[in-house]
Structures are given as structure tokens and as C-alpha cells.
Length: 201
Image 1 (tube, rainbow, N blue to C red):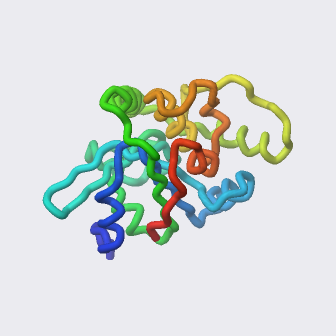
Image 2 (cartoon, rainbow, N blue to C red):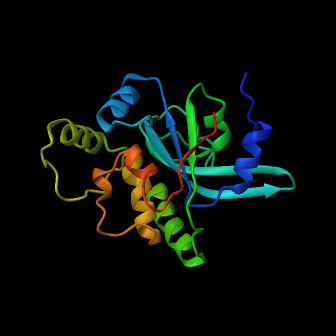
């Protein structure tokens, strides 16, 4: 049965989490293993911390992400089931049989950076931005072949690391010179704006 609660050591980490931090995970599906293989990292998915809610010693972390899963109910908008940009509680990740890492920002987002990040996330969430299958396949082909196949970013649809990177670009924390459409979960987690990732489970 799902726990929907954090273990004591996870509570300590959750209490330190900030909006803009990144959560990465490694799944066991064929797609996840392909992403790990072509990116050369242990990560197959990334999400960004949208909100941290604290009530005494209880902590709830709301994540924003873009995923191909259309079968899991959205936690911000109950009854919403849609592929692409979604909102989910961190504890749902921790209840799954997957590896989970936390990459904390070296410096917290300023109020203006946080506002800009949330404006962008709210926009792509409210417009039901779809998952970017061509984009993630294109990144894989480029990494496998070494060829430059796609030069211009395309945000009509978003894959996970494209979405997370663009959220950070919109906040101003990541340079606009970075092309979000060429990022992988591994390149996001190892970005200069983050401390070394900490494994949560």
C-alpha cells in the first residue's frame, strides 16, 4: 500500500528544499533505460520544485513536470488526467519503486526569479502543454550520432528536462544561451547552479 508520507531522513531533506530545486529519478521502463543509456547518466526524468508547504513538522513538496503519463491524476487539479505538464506531490515519487535524487540550488531564487518561474510554469500548465515526443527522440539521436540535427528550440511541446531547463531560464537562474531543447535529465542535474545531487531513495 502507498505510504504517502516521508521517512524521517526524507523529512530532513524535504524541510531544506526550495522552489527551483530539481528532483530526478530513474525508472525501470524501456524508455527510461533508453534515456539513461543515450544520456550516460543514472537519471531518466526530472521535475522542478514549484512550492514548499510547511505545517509544523509536516512538509509537502509540489513538483511541476512534463511527462508522457496520462493515467495519473494531477494533484493540483483533481480529476485532471493529461499528458505533458503536470503537478504532483513529491511523496508520490517516494512511494514508487524508483531511485529518487534531489539537486538543491546553490542559492535560493529571489522573489522576482520565483515569480518569473511560476508565471511560466502556470502558463504551460494552464494551456495543457503536451509532452514532446519528437524532441526527446531528437536529443537521443543527436547524442547517439554526434550530429547537429535540431538547432532551434521548440516549446510547443515539452519533454521533462526541456521543461525544467526552460523554467530555470525564465527565472533567470540559467543563461538564455542554453538551449532547453537539447538538455537531458543528466545535464540538468549537473548544471552549475546546483549542488551535487543527494539520493533520497
